[in-house]
Image 1 (cartoon, rainbow, N blue to C red):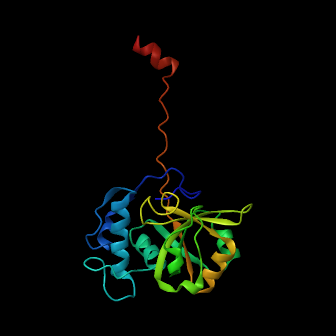
Image 2: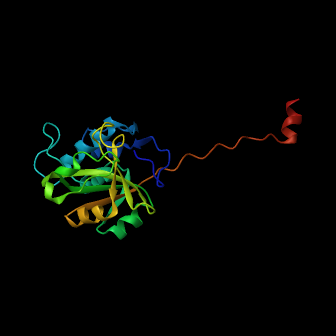
Image 3: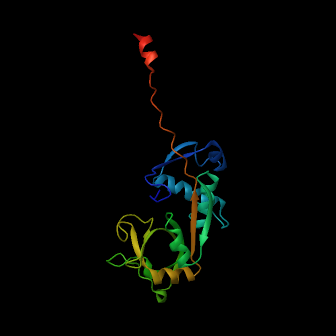
Length: 205
């Protein structure tokens, strides 16, 4: 539900009957608000179709960006998805909108610094893997803006900043960037008000 150049101001999506059927009952056809409940359902669908053992629910066994993008495709909300494997490719992709970022998660990354910058210290050890959303890059500061799903008490109201060099390092550690090509449904045309002709006005008198 993050605002982007691909869908500015989008707060809801419509699931088609075909998309609802493909989700095997997880989603219903009709309008869905892009909120926490939607995100959790999308994650649940991803765990059902990903290549990893187990699924949420009952157990949160994790998933990955490509599986979330595949879930969006099943629902008819993304036409396709692609990947970025380098900083240059990521910088090109982020111009079009947010990207999903799967990364090795280090112990030092669990709590960002007071300035919101993620501390990337390889010596702190790997504690697992994690998926976040990259929403922007500031060329002047060399900092990436990243949204996390751990609530507003984490980092800068739920977000953090990542130094460009640290992003490059994490991408080199089997990091993956998934960029969905969202299927934006065009807005219905604005009805054109009917204009009565002079003859119709005359006849109506």
